Image (cartoon, rainbow, N blue to C red; front, side, top):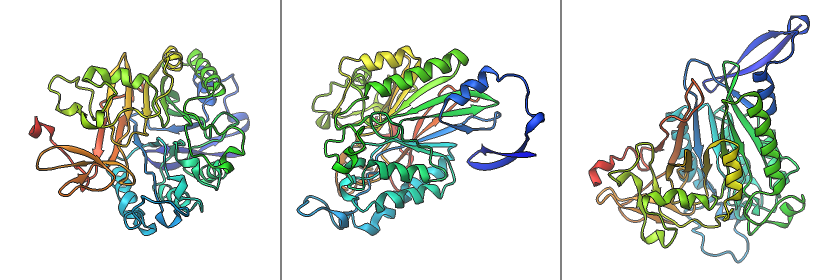
Length: 404
């Protein structure tokens, strides 16, 4: 009797036959096997190459045709139902095809829920992502569960998608789960995909499940869950690397960016382009164009707990005009590169090198849209030289040396 086992090979699902019954290993499981079993999902990558993770963020699809009565301030032409390909899908498609990731993480605000009461923007996005046949792992942002379809319905759509790694637990928020990168039978890295909550306009239908939370920040049960799991994993596999991914940043991000002059005050008029700083660290990059809205964990207690667990990277979205990725205290603090032109985005002036955050495209500027690539070492799962991919007609390969 045979058992069919699916293994991901460079984004392609291959199948191998493993013997069952008496042919299976009779002895007890190894610590590596036990560690792997603790995570909710695994992505297996060939041991002879570096895995690639792609961070997309804030597609925030707006379907103006679903605008609620009396809702103003929405460009009904720019956000027309049939503009989703032009505004979002073309950019994500190019980014995925050019970076060839093994895993795609999406750090929230997939849809602007207020403009998706029919749920069609979400189901359309899921169908689009499924077309890549690559594992993808989304988290909720502060706008997703505004939809009157309700968070449980939205979670069900994710869970039913074949390539989507997502689990709705009975924890604060919606969709808290872990994804492990496995190579050669070893758990190299785990991504903790969490709901940072914070939906101020959450729908009544979402609140009905009893664990949707309007205020920003983790619930105590979320913290207890990941603390227990990481502790157990580290006892079995001390070398496993730990990442967190969610939507709204913690207050500690402001501290991490202070090294480049960030004060979290009037940043929109005093932006910071790290790529133009002559003495920047070689591993830091990106842009800071807005103050940190809704920053939580102002006493840093949650962060200190994560730090004690050995986290080496935190990936967030939320601030569409921020794409900075810096290392502070041995931890990478990264905003993903915005992945659509819906709502506010950054625009690049090819004549002056200036970047402007705007809800519409300034004359003579081009949008800066794409994703942030996170290569991992095949040796130990550490992060290797992450970078921003900007689509060819949305920023492209900008040489910042031209503007220094």
